[in-house]
Length: 239
Image (cartoon, rainbow, N blue to C red; front, top):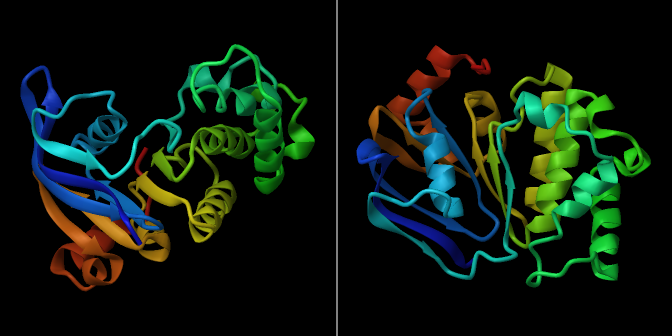
């Protein structure tokens, strides 16, 4: 399995003020990395740095390949997104726009990819429905389908189950796990330690101002930090 991303001694922050530093990890093809940590520890900032939306203050993020057409991104949902007045198909198709350079119209292969992805995620029957009429779990599947249409190899997910009921959370976790088994690399920010322990292959734990752990899930579970976090968090989702 080839290395896709390497983060080397990165310091991340806003407007010259460091949020976290000493971030070191690697992601290889087929990994499922879960990024854990308290609110404000820099998890979402790291995701934005990986996407190139925010520069690193120091250190380096190396990509083995071009990011163009390789990454799908599922951000934290906002109330504006939940009320978006477009059809399911329109939203899923929009994920194809960044592929293969700019083109003003959808190509035949874009439409085929959208159909395939909607079928894969079990939302093909919803394609003509208005997005804002869907349940929270259905909306997240639509946004995940959009991200998959944009992704060649890697999905970045920022708190993908926030606001969903327990069944919808479990369904989405299982869906993400099946995508990972199909060869998509997953990088997911989460508060849910039990989901991390169940699904992830690797864990990155960021504490206040610094990295606390990076390694395999098995090593994390057996570490004092992992055992302590499992006890204190209890698997509850912090909103």
